[in-house]
Image (cartoon, rainbow, N blue to C red; front, side, top):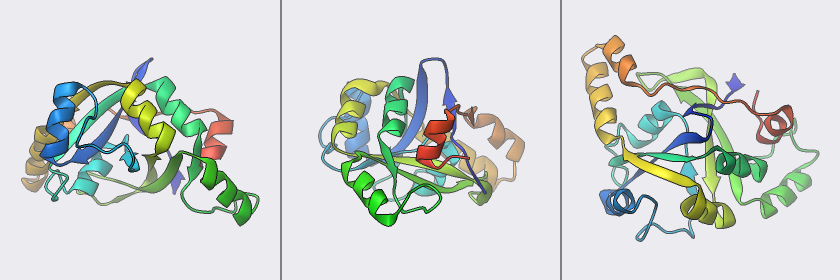
Length: 195
């Protein structure tokens, strides 16, 4: 199973997804970034895969995840996060030792986790999607510097869910964001466990 970043992006920006309660989503949409009651002190997880977000939030129906937000951030910020990341679990193919991984984990403000990407039925695909956890400096940079736009994708999630339920898969697929492989250097791929 391959680990691959797939995302909607252009030369300057990339779109990631988060799901929140209306109490957090609505002030964020008004402000164009995350504001109280969003807490910068907690780790916040961003996901470039729309269908992984749909799976995680139950098509934006799980309590506390009723609003799916598309967060457009700078590619420079996204890549800063990858450069300053550590895998969330020890992997002997990427770390010299458990101790070396623990040292990296202690000093990295970003966590990387790979989970099976999802299809329209939210079943696992034979590739893993990236989740990126931002804490401390990374969370501050995300909220204060990287975000260039926020959009509410809840209605899109509900429309796709309804089409899938009605077995109208071509129509559902046509509503999905156009995600494609995101390029990373060999050095960065090794750090984040891509490939």
